[in-house]
Every structure is written in structure tokens, then in C-alpha cells.
View (cartoon, rainbow, N blue to C red):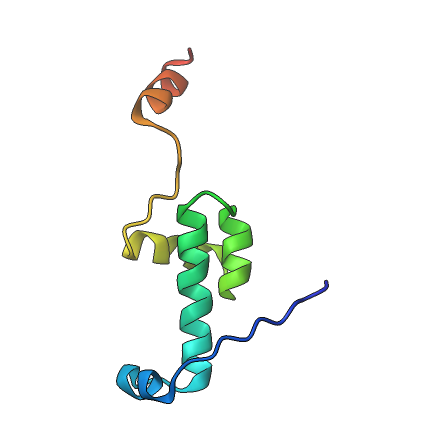
Length: 85
């Protein structure tokens, strides 16, 4: 699998304010980016979990924790699907 590297410059003052190591910030930013891109419907949960660097089940749990719906289906679509029509 090919990978690309993206560099984000973060002011040291912000890192101190957040009280996070560089590794923790990297993990946080990857997770938050994956959650937001998934929420926008640009990535599947599997692809977003890969970006976040966590197993899919954990990613879905994190979606629930952050109030991000994991299904894009509307209540009416769900009702029709359940009723078989």
C-alpha cells in the first residue's frame, strides 16, 4: 500500500496549551480528521478507521461517543426497508 505524508505545522504554544506530545497530537488530528471526513460522507467507516489508525469497531464506537451518525439512511428510508417496500 502506498502512503503519502502530510506535514502540519503546529505552534509550540498550542502544543503546550493542549498538553499533548507530538505523537498524541498526530493521533488526535488523524482521528478528528477521519471522524469529520466520515461525517461529511466522503469516506466509508472502513476507510475512515484506516485513516484514524484504529479498528473499524472502535471507530464506530468513537462515532457514537462524538455524536456522529453511522448511517446516512433517513428514518423514512429505514421504515420502507423494514416494511419491505
